[in-house]
Image 1 (cartoon, rainbow, N blue to C red):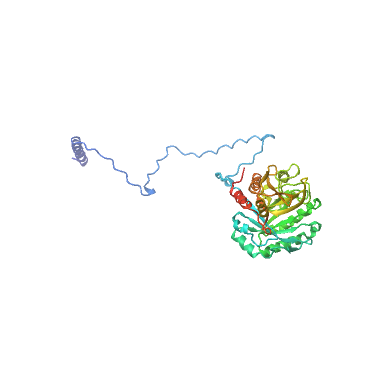
Image 2 (image 1 turned 90 degrees about the vertical axis):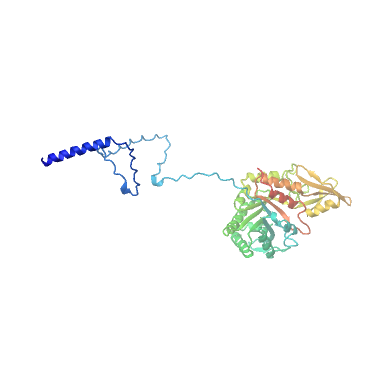
Length: 427
């Protein structure tokens, strides 16, 4: 037998035997082999071959040009490039800002018998600015200390007190006969320089300017003087306040409010020796017969465009005693501070009366067959004035004055101030 025949015979027998063996055994379930964990990129299976031949993509046709906008269409700016795309930041609702602090400015009488009045020591928490009347501005622009009472440079006590109680010390620089000063604007720069030098030397926080008896013809020089002083102070971050009357064409309230931190509007002295016709409150809210009052003057000032946030509502801590004749006209008038007037009321057991138009109290008494009528301020009149300041969104209040000789601001002023500061601003 040839080798080929022999291999064929053996293969046939072996194959038949295997077929018989497998067809006569009990079947056994064959479990699939679990895949091996892939531990590297090299073990990933190769990508299947693509059945289709890849063809390069043809470029997209350019977009059709947009038609030009009509002449009436609004021209929009081109969109920003991807590099210049603005970052969109989510807008968060901000809480409303708290109302501005109510400012209380206190003028100190030049003839104070003590440096820090006792009522201020007891109520320092209610004060923000202290302005003692310490300096005169001379006609040539020079600065001179006043010659009465406790004067500068007796300031270490004031500086320490103000520092301890977080009060700004801003003394008053005044001129009550300013015709010559305002007639020579060439001295204004030197005057401003001298004021700043004094502020730096004495370490004040700023000043209050008090120029009174200004006639209409000096309106512009008054603005120029205020601006000169303001610029000199603001360069060194000092505060600047101006005391102004509540009426008069000489006063540019809008300009001055723009060139000062505060304007103290002196809403008082509506009666006095200048006119014997009127008997009434020194600070009347309304006074039809008089034709001028706080209501009229405040609205006129606001109508000029003066910023309410710069205005301080000035109130008096004094009143007037009128000596009346048989016809009811006054023959004498005496200005006295509130403590004296309240003591007089108690001494004569006088009844408190109230004028609802003026929003002011008064009382009457007889002495040696002479009739007296006394107009003053109390808790109700102070409250009404402070509420008026609030309703008109003014920056705060001010007063003339504390530290008056042999008297004080009375029993009702400080409680009314504390009540005013504690109350939220009225809408």
